[in-house]
Amino acid sequence: MSKISAIYPVFATILAAGLSAGAQDFSQNDGKVAALLSQMTLDEKIGQMVQADCMALTNASEVATYDLGSVLSGGNSDPAAGNTAQDWLDWVNGYKAEALKTRLKIPLLYGVDAVHGHNNILGAVIFPHHIGLGATHDPDLVRQAERVTAQEVAGTGIRWAFDPCVAVPQDERWGRTYEGYSDDTRWVSELGVAAIQGLQGSQLGADPQTVLACAKHYLGDGGTHNGVDQGNTECDEATLRARFLPPYAAAVKAGVGSIMVSYSSWNGVKMHSNKYLLTDVLKGELGFQGFLVSDWAAIDQIAPDYKEDVERSINAGLDMVMIPYGPGQKNNFVEFIQDLKSLVAEGKVAPNRIDDAVTRILRIKFQMGLFDGDATDPALTQAIGSPEHRAVARQCVRESLVLLKNEGHVLPLSRKIGNLVVAGEAADDLGMQCGGWTIDWQGKVGNVTPGGTTLLQAIKTTVSPDTQVRFSADGSDLAGADAIVVVVGEKPYAEMKGDTKKPDLTMDDQMLIARAQATGKPVVTILFSGRPLVLGKALQNSSALVAAWLPGTEGEGITDVLFGDYPFNGSLPRPWPKTDRQIPTLSSGGKCLFPDGFGLKN
Ligand code: BGC
Ligand code: BGC
Image (cartoon, rainbow, N blue to C red):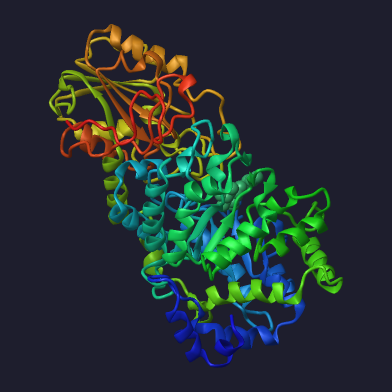
């Protein structure tokens, strides 16, 4: 921010008019920001730059003790009292209240991974993971979905979602493939912008039902060699820019207020220490006015020495650092504060770098209107998991289904079918339907959250009263069926644990489908997966096959289409490999079983 705009806010507006067309300007409060900054001690400034996980704090009062600017809940960091929306609201309000007890009463930003709905909270609506939204190819729908997510997040007092992931996954072996919309940069850019607009509203801060979005993970997280999570993206700068930068350019233009840096490296250099990409390209060239947050303990990976991690990451351009550890643990937030303080005293981190970081954080807090009060509208809390919200998710599910085969037009099924056997444990498992980042960090199998509908439940309520529906989890009881719906797929996983060398449908699943095929009756296979899986014999042994991705809690979105109330509309957001040898399979070329954009209509 220039001095002139600090003194005369009106100049800020005029200067902002020169910004690239359509970009949102966050500098209109820079006069207030500068005034506040001038009153802050170094401790207060550094405190703003800390984002501690709630589990790193022994007591919420540490927010006030250390003047913390932000707290997060990581994937497994739930409120001590329980996991309902009210538990979350009370918990978050406890931390926010502490920030208001500090000398300068700077409001706290609480952050959470709401990556497919407000997915840590019991009873919240779970949307399809991004790969499924990618299959809808529908920015308006993505905008609506994220609008609902924003309302559910705001309903728990939280005003910051670590979403959207705008990775452009280049290799199905990566366990985060499902967090990306597509392997096609243009679709990621378009749907990423829609997500940001849904979360933040048309103008960040104009509406208390919205939340701060966070485009992640900058830059090249989806391009690592062999799809290894947190790995190394090996390419020249032109490729890096062409493939991975456009979603960020579009996000900045759309006014994204925060961006999270990637664990990964580019040609051997950790992104968290890459000043050129963080400062010169993102803040300079693209004109990003918001703030950069680190990933979870990610700076710890830069060098063996933590103080060096702090120095190199802050000097590279990091504004806020996400710290999962508290006193008594390695690389904890108190150590971060002490290290950064001494680095300033030693002249290794310049005071104006600190001021720039804090200016960016305060700018967003002002822009969001947090200084004018941040009380939660009880109606928003009430509406978490409401039928209206579920209806939007249900629409997302039905638009995301991709029909890969429909021999003899077995689909749609008749509601009046006499005997329908539903086989496969995934048919009645909400956890498998939702995937990772659902209630638990890695997700889990079973009845993970109330209010959802498994596919089996949805089938039972959709068919005619005369239809017999029999469930056979292991597929041992298929006799007498007029048709068999087999539901198979991946067990839940998330980052790190989700990497695999062979993204294949398991032999057990393939055998289940083969057994169904042996009955001679129509076999409709529904696949739950976070990526295209090598199908083996499953395709030839199925009469119809539907890629349902990780659809979330609204199983009725599947029956809407299975029984013909709506047509199949989805198309592949990335190509589908036939064999492991075809992996990575990319839209940009090479052999595959189905190209991207493929999807039959029935
Ligand atoms: C993930 C991020 C996430 C953060 C907080 C990290 O491990 O890479 O996507 O936002 O944890 O849970
Ligand atoms: C946390 C996640 C985080 C992960 C990274 C988990 O324990 O719950 O939020 O992303 O650790 O290591």
